[in-house]
Every structure is written in structure tokens, then in C-alpha cells.
Length: 312
Image 1 (tube, rainbow, N blue to C red):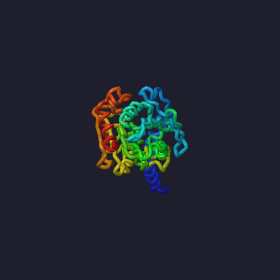
Image 2 (image 1 turned 120 degrees about the horizontal axis):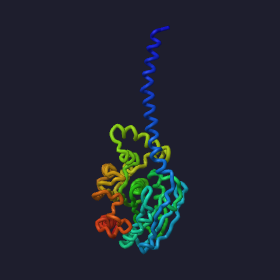
Image 3 (image 1 turned 180 degrees about the vertical axis):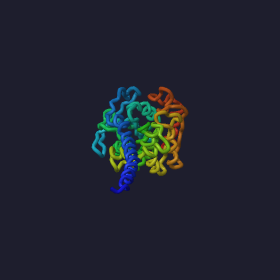
Image 4 (image 1 turned 30 degrees about the vertical axis):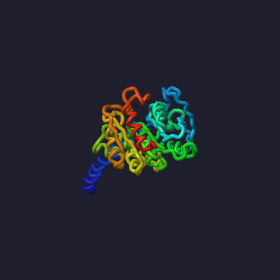
């Protein structure tokens, strides 16, 4: 027996140890995204609380629209004669229902703007059983834009997309994907799903660099390979010269401020920003989200932006 055989076998055994460790680490990192996300996204959100337009003195029309991928989605239209613009509202990943924006619709109606409050797929009365984290919801916005553009009473009315949290991310993705949208207001949006995932894990440096590809692979497999590149920090670069207002709270505990910084870094120079101090994910002061017109600074920022760009 060749004594060198034992040496070669020992060498192969030692070589196998780091390979096994690398494979084990890869399996662990690959398991993290589905373990964290499955219960978060594999669901239809049934809201514990919703609101009516009547509570704001409104009489909205309930719309049922069909997306390009075959889902029926529900929206609520608040119309005003000869509108300066029509604003599409989008809400967050699990709450609140978009019907919480009827107070915003009231505020805008008084200033001559129509509103359409869109309950995105897998939320409320809309169809769907998987939340797509912004990778597919631009198709929901597209259904609303097609409705507006096919409605003679809107004629050449400008379209503004206005979203909160995940809805803010969807709003950015929507204006990046849909050239017929004329302006953007985004509040508390994440810059990309893998960014906010890692931010909330507290992952940075090497740990983030190792984990990020597994998050991206998981979402690509779940939401479709063709949708893998749809994320706010890339779509904001498709804005062109269309007006936009990005809003964030400096101490936001749900979508950390770093997301806002990434978006601003990628945005065209003309994009307007507003940073509100404190931890106010919903931006509106205190418990005034249902009555935003009572938050004077907030109302002034929103209405000022709209009127600068769309008032006659």
C-alpha cells in the first residue's frame, strides 16, 4: 500500500470540511427569506376596521376593475366637476385599509381634485391571496389609469399617484412603469424590498452582502423572474421631468430613514422632499390621519405641491 494514499485521503477530508461549512451556511441564509416572509405575504388582508366616504360627507362610487393578470380589484372614486387632477391613493402592506384616505379625498375635493382610493390585490374587497410587495401591484395601478384614460369626463386630467409605506413603494414603481402618470407623492416608502428587509434585520457589511442575493432570489422565484428588477430605487430613475414629492419621518421605526436617503440619491435633481422629525410612519401628526386637513403643515405641503404643478 502506498503510504501517500493515507496522506491524500486526509487532505481530501480536510478539503471537504470548508465545502460542507459553505453549503451549510448557504442553506441557512437561503432559508431566512421564506421563514421571515411567508406568513407576511401568503395571505389576504381582511381589515379589522374600514371607513366610509359618508363619514367625510362624501358619496364615493365603488369601482371593480380587472388587472392585466386577471384579478378583480376594488376602488372608490370621489369625483368633482372639472378636476384639476385625479389622485390615486395606495395604502400599506397590512394596514390601514385605503378607506382611511377618505379624509384625504375630502381635503382634495375642497381644492378641486378628484380621488380614486385603490385597495390593492390581496387586500380588503380586492381579489388575490399573495401580497406582492410592489413587484406586481403596479398592474393594479395600471387598471386604474386605464379606467381614467378611458373615461371622457377626465379628458386630459393629470393623474397623480400617492402612496403610503408599501403603497409608497408601489406608487414609485407605478410612475416608473406607467408613462401616463403625471406626478408622484410617496410617503414612508422603502427603497427596495431587500433593503428594508436587511435594515430591519440590522444587517450590514458582510452579513448584508451575503444575505441580499438570497432575498432577491426568493422574491424573483415567488413573483416572477421578469419582475425581479422592479423596485423603487430603480424606478425613480424613470421619472423623467415629472414632478414628485418624497416624504419620510427621520426616526421611522418601520421603514428606516436610510431608505429615503437611497431614494433621494437615485432621484432626479428636481424631486422635492420633506422630512418630518420624529417617528411618524404615517407622517400626519398624532391621530389626525383620518382628518389630515387638521394638520396644517401636512395639508400645506400636499396641497402646495399639487397646486404648484396642476392649478390653472
